Image (cartoon, rainbow, N blue to C red; front, side):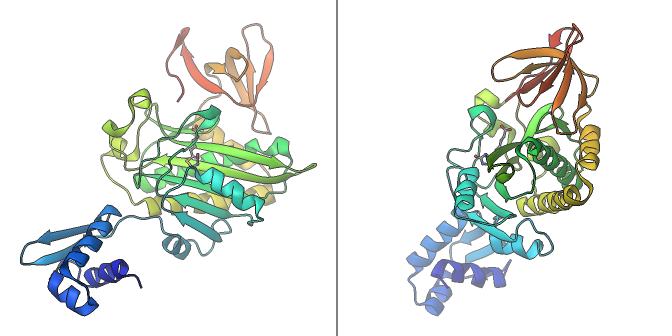
Length: 334
Ligand code: BTN
């Protein structure tokens, strides 16, 4: 075991008690300066370790790390997460998941990172991914669905995510079409689905999810600070990211199985309950055009059905939605 991990287990075994650097150094044949260096690294990883002159070190609390060992222990019964890659830092977990897919990784593989240096959102936006404060994960799926059915997976993920967040935090959240999770009109999580298609069927889908968990309100970059929020900012509590990810994977896994046996209808029904979008007047900024009207329904394939002022129906696959009230736009997208 590396010296750093050895020090961690030694201190953790005596949680709350002072352990002198000298005695650890003796046991491990390391200098006191070397012990101090390792303790600093452990603190950088998020472990809370006190230090005091003449007393030594005292272990307070383990870091809330998204370790594959910890997650696998909690996810024995799920098909999602049979294989988990947990990495400290990457550009984007979706990018890694796609590389793994190309190498033949199986359905249900999860990639999770403590930090993303180039986290991506929809429409080429960036996803703020500060180290250890959020969840940045991607599920690699190989469903037997046609490419046209792929939006079902995004809606399925949004349902699982909204329910998991409410379960763990008791926070009232809503889904904003197609896949934003909001609390009190601010975005706390988002989903980016990427798809690779074969001849008739999907080859693989990567469902990437970012959840703003323990991000303080004033830590968001200025350009999104009005519209973004976190579980911490909404509830004034910090959360174990492991518990939230676990709850999300369990819900996702249940819905993914349900999709296989009962089809999309029950998931869509739940999505509608959580989104309360039907009947609302909206403006949708799709990639090449904008369209305004009233949301009539979400189609069986997950596509939004919008009626414009002239009574024409539009099928909208994706875009940024804003709610209209008496002709005024009341919120935008990020
Ligand atoms: C959005 O709402 O625009 C989608 C945000 C998706 C962010 C997640 S974080 C994990 C995964 N990796 C990425 O680069 N993006 C997704």
